[in-house]
Image (cartoon, rainbow, N blue to C red; front, side, top):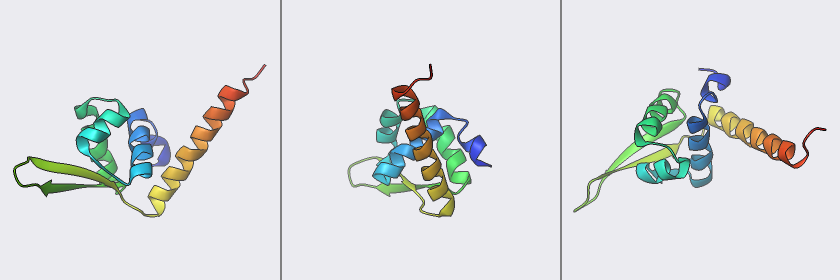
Length: 101
């Protein structure tokens, strides 16, 4: 999948941004941070995992349910995604500060 297709979903963009600042988040915390429904986030995580951008880890805690953690994989492709998102965010911020006449 190319960058354009990965960026087609705003939820995928928010997931990558959140994971790039935190490196690892529990599933429900990620759902809250991206302000989306669990099923939407889960579907997009499957796409990102298939593309080799994130990894799911499951931890069994005593007296608790199985915890699902999401981690961003540090590789060349992920670095490109993070850089592109940063540029897009800066460009969006500048365009809001200095609207065209």
